[in-house]
Length: 369
Ligand code: IPM
Ligand code: MG
Image (cartoon, rainbow, N blue to C red; front, side):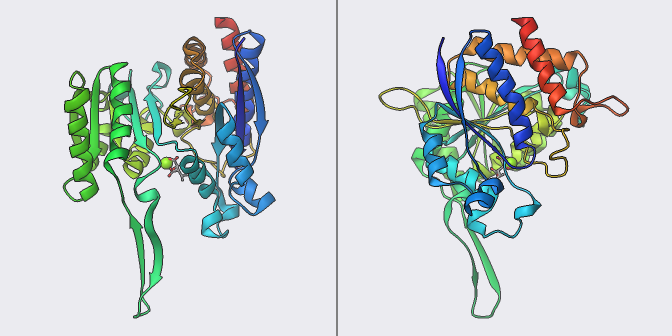
């Protein structure tokens, strides 16, 4: 049986609660003889700040780089509102992305049939939806320098963030999108703002040239990012793969999450480039939802995005597509059986807690297997 090293970074808020449930799924795969996992746990975000005065330690980053995959819960919360900017909980997440070179963020938005009514949009708009947002994750305005607030001679302040993209950065993320599209419905929508941003002009040029050179068989279209947001809520099923920069990807993926019923449903994979020798990629898997401090510690959080993120690890890091399908099917079955956490429950419907939902997924896995 194949064996893998997992680094668990539960983080803050509901992170530890949803991480507990994913460990049950890993335990099931082990018992079923599908794969075994050696897990280590470390701190990130506010939890790391409390222990080490750092949003993530060098040692934790090194462990993350050495693991076969990292499972990340969530970071942040009001408790750390006043910590130094460089050590705010989110800085731990951004450093992991940057230091591990995780430039490709895959955010699938799938609307499970059972949840079509949980979306704020009409059933016919979202039913059967299956799109993939490919977000550039290590460049753009998140990391561009200068990034500062300076005081001018007048005493007024001026804030600067810098959006930077190079040909190489655009090309490698576009290639990920085209490759994924070939395995899906063969269509890529590239999204930027070339009507106001130079980085958008270059983005469109590079994607178009790469398409001409290597991916003529894939359908390519360009949507301005604002229009893309509008089309996502108007008729999302027109999309297959959407590729965009770091900031637009952040926004568009939150929009897409509501098409699926809840932010609590969206998993993600953050991947590095394949190693030239081994072909292995550094990878981190995390739910798109945040730390949800308002419900943290109450056992109410939806663990499905975390569980589906582990499913993505099975698919993209461990080459266990069948096991990944099994997890996806178990989640679909649990939802079809009517079980709901509070975030996806209809008005008046009884909601279960985090533990019950996790246990139900494991039961469904046992049943399917
Ligand atoms: C996300 C989050 C992060 C981001 C935050 C927590 C820094 O919103 O992963 O979408 O902006 O990338
Ligand atoms: Mg976000």
